[in-house]
Image (cartoon, rainbow, N blue to C red):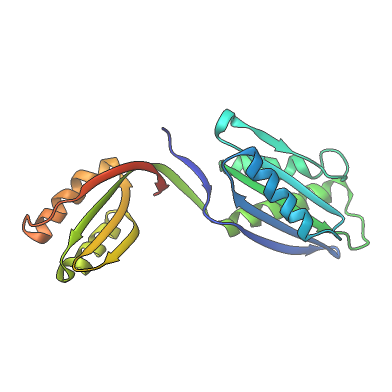
Length: 206
């Protein structure tokens, strides 16, 4: 399993170009069906828009799709897809909505506008790197919680859940090559009292 880049969250960003309003929507997706559902949702939300231009890239079979949605051929969908590909993100869908403002942009203007809308949408979604990680947990006394929590963050771990009961159960994910380091630091902090338990593996943000 290789690491890859994607966006962290669904988001959007917009700007005005010669009275036309461009809105770039973005969402992480894992299948063509998820991408189509997102495209449909954006179109439904923007029924009065002049164009809703979609593009998506999936890791599975390296699928790449785009559409000009009525704009002149090559001026909309391809630029949106090109920005996605150049950014290196995968498992992502971008839809750029345009409300025409009455001023023609020309082919070059359209390419620049759709490219910019795609770029600001990806930025709004937050580009992150996902990598194979171990999922671990440790149960500690409340007096150790804060120190261990800080140590895990310093080691690049993602704190995924904390359950506060008689003790505190901390569930986290981290790259495999950081497990030995965390184990050693946990031993040092707790004087050998605690050790983590590996519960699985998954792709997680690093």
